[in-house]
Image (cartoon, rainbow, N blue to C red; front, side):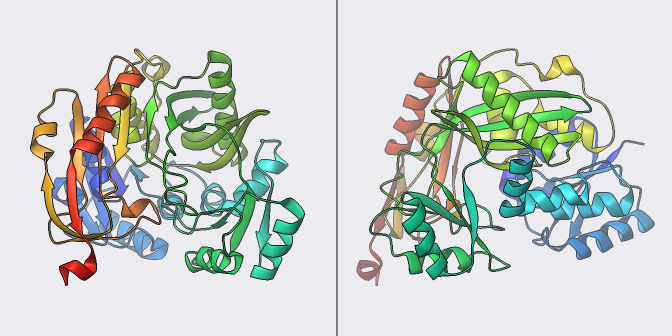
Length: 411
């Protein structure tokens, strides 16, 4: 009997990972609260349950095991649900991050406290209980600072505080996106930002995922911090890249992860790498499923699946075989109602376009982006170098015309 893996997420970004699991011969269960989610159509079996409902997912998984077949492993692909994955793994006795590790990965304040106590370099940070306390912190620390919910995702409620930003509004906005009403302020780090994705296996570690993130629209969308993609290979030297990898891997160990995936968000400051956040899951943004394999030839999803079901990994398979240029850029049309979308087919036909997707259609309303869920589309391009991949991605981002009309005009 093929091993059975439960994928806790059926969204569009999970689709390539689900397809990879099927090609590798796994019996795939996909769980999502939306029975029409794209990943559900690709599953051998489905579980209709919210990916954020830990108790409900455990109950559904136990029922599946009792009525259908054993589950050998559980993981998420492009979904930030560490508590759900760890809860199911713990309840069924499966491999995976511990409940303690998942709790730390789900709480940005607890995470930073753990990392700092373990000697991992992080920005200065402090919990903030009120807008008055935030003003006091600004007087002591100065600006810029960052304020964010401790337990949200997708950059919701993440704000860069600079002169002119209403601190009472900023505090309220951050609190609004926290399910527990908790907020943390932290130092704004100057320097290039990087996404890493590492595989930890017992006392070994590999980091095939390494991309420089793009924040060229920081001022345009201020005070919201909206990423506009990224590219690989990065343009930094080998010593700095090695230092970033070492810190990301050590951060995963500090959270208690012995075997599994560590996704890092780091900044290379003038004094060295610092960790903004760490996640114990496969990344979104088609990073784990598309960008890393395109750039390096490493099957990161395959490694995560093997670890999820308790198998080992081949170290040789985690060493990049190449360093090709790959870039992703997002689409940001003007706010309003979409009246036409042009040039998509032309760019999709380009041999160097790997994937081009839209999140809006004609008739939809486009809001000004305040978090990553409000981007209108994306393109992933490939080339022999990062620079050429970026030029191609930017050509598509400018060439695909999502034409809008202001809401008042549409009315």
